[in-house]
Amino acid sequence: MIDANAIAKDISAKKVAKKHIAANFDKKTIDAKLKANFNNGKTKQSLSVSMKIKKDEVIWLKGTKFLTVFKVKITPTSLSYYSPVAKHYFEGDFSMIKELLGVEINFEQLQNLFLGQSLLDVTEEKQDVEIVNNKYLLSPEKQAKLFDIFFAINPSNFKLNEQTIVNADKDLRLDVKYPSYNLINDIVFPAEINIIAKNKKSRTTIDFTYKTVVFDTDVNMSFRIPDGYKLLEF
Image (cartoon, rainbow, N blue to C red; front, top):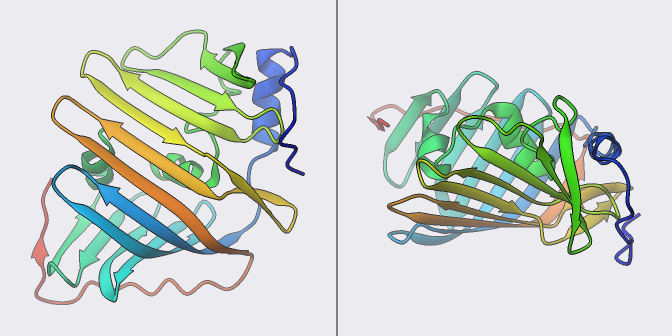
């Protein structure tokens, strides 16, 4: 249930963290259609995106604009990408995502980003909590040396309203916002995701709007990089 009028009550950081983890997505597969808007100051593009996820195993993405613009297959250990438009490809680690978002991110964190879950396990370390604008703002008691991270959690469903990673030394900031959620087969699932990645040189925004979402179906994740494409290096 999504209660838009829920009030954030005074409860412990530990309880907020546990409730957020308890609200984690627990289906096996996702088959979704999204609208994506990308803008990094140089390139501005709107695409239709098919996203298929086998939870904890594979994230598969296909972007189209009349024709297929890109395909991506991501596993816990690798990332493969190719573009039939640009005729280039990439196979390797997560350096491509780091180039895009400005922060290092692994498979589980990327999966969590799409699901409205925290990039870090909020139950692993002690958290501080305060109520700000009727949201629970969680942050580790001891922030990591390289960055600060904050989670704004909705008192209605204990999913994320927002998560922020800041590296002041490198002038890096990643904001991931979840303006709204839908209730799909009793599952609270993001309706929108707004990503803003900033560094000294650039600002990248990626906005996703989920159009259709289906859980626990057979998902076809066919992927083969065509011959003759040029290797992208990061």
